[in-house]
Amino acid sequence: MDKKVDIFRRELVDVQGIPLFWSIAEQWSQVESFEARPDDLLISTYPKSGTTWISEILDLIYNNGDAEKCKRDAIYKRVPFMELIIPGLSNGIFS
Image 1 (cartoon, rainbow, N blue to C red):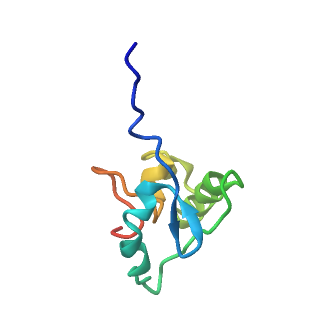
Image 2: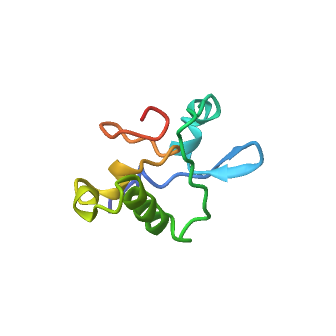
C-alpha cells in the first residue's frame, strides 16, 4: 500500500522562540520588515478568539456602517492577515 505524503502537514518551525507553521516562518522576514502607515490598524489576537468577528466590526466602522459595502468580498480579502501569505491573494504586508 502506498503511503500518502501530506505536503501541507509539516513540523513547526522555531522563530525567535515561537513555534510557527513553516509557511509563516518561511515569510517571516517580510513580516519583520513591515512598516505601518499612519492610518493602518493592526489586529492582534490569539487563535480562535474572535479575529474574524472583530475584523467584520472594523470593516463596518471603516465603511460608515454600510453593511452592503461590507458584503463586497470575503473577510480574508477585505481584512488580510499579515503573516498569511497565499499566492494570488493580497496579504496585510502589501495591502
